[in-house]
Length: 141
Ligand code: CMP
Image 1 (cartoon, rainbow, N blue to C red):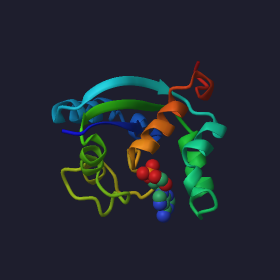
Image 2 (cartoon, rainbow, N blue to C red):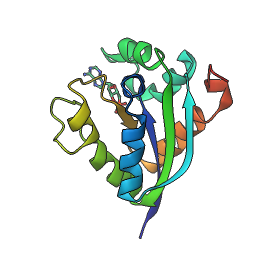
Image 3 (cartoon, rainbow, N blue to C red):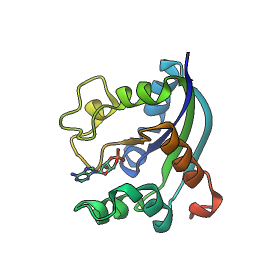
């Protein structure tokens, strides 16, 4: 057993569309343990840190504007191989291509507004958690 931690963010579209409960239900149903959970409105600076690897890409500015447009919900989970488990549950980035049964496949037809974000490694989960659970990153606090 390889117990790992994964960071999930319900994006502005997921929150606006009333899908917080649906995403949390799926996390719990799967058997993942929720360690931390927080609603926040991310500052531009913190979203830029979160998406540092995408800086310079054509969709970067639009992504930053989208992620700062509305509150998000950050969820830290723990479970056996949680990174792989969560990434399988959410499906590929493009909601139009994500298979039914995945969160993106069931609720998104967009590549940008794809309901959830999940870190792609343990290192990134730790890095991104530090950002979203930092009170300084939350314009609501
Ligand atoms: P996410 O898994 O959060 O990682 C980076 C995000 O950038 C991605 O989900 C999408 O929201 C967005 N994204 C990735 N590729 C594109 C693209 N080609 N066009 C627009 N947005 C994108």
